[in-house]
Length: 256
Image (tube, rainbow, N blue to C red; front, top):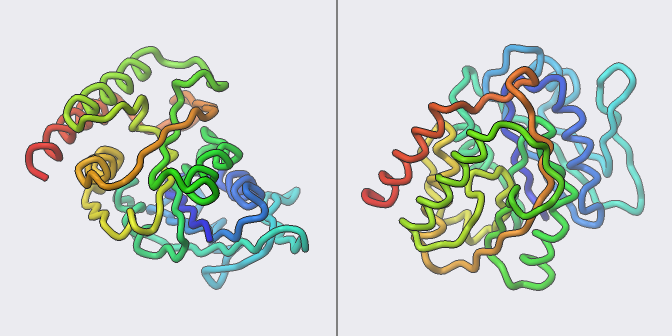
């Protein structure tokens, strides 16, 4: 079973469509979707409570109805999809949401999915194949810098991402091009050794540092599509997060 962790904060406009896309990705693979609402205040929580009144539901495909609610279909040719929802009383950060999700997963393979439509779950096919079918990888990173379709946005974001990956590679002796990418897929064995404590976006650095320092897992990277958002569209990460990332790189290398 594939476990999909979806951290959510104020994504009422995009979350329904993300859940629909996730449910139809890898249709032959049973999935559980762990949604963690991190103290949303834009109607996301109310939408989740209306569509998952008991905190969980299952189907084989989820589609968005004309009024924005989810329709739960049972297609005999598709594997089951279970959705479980968790709530934080207040906004604590993406890392805190990931910690809640990672503690709840039951699958053999885990992947992280943002709720903002910047990433396409169709890209999981190659990632999943490397881990489950070809059995050559324990961890697979997505990369937005491998020539797949991606929206041209802020140069300073691009530069910051490349700098963070460069420093990470120097400190941890890796060759990854995009460690801040949302898409990280890994096995349960990897999960069993992760000890995330960062509540903010530093969770991306901490997770990657722990994987690299373990020195026991086969790490791959594949190109993915990227449908980036502007700040007007609701993008949340800013320059302060980039500065923090450099600090976290030093911290997790020197004091791990």
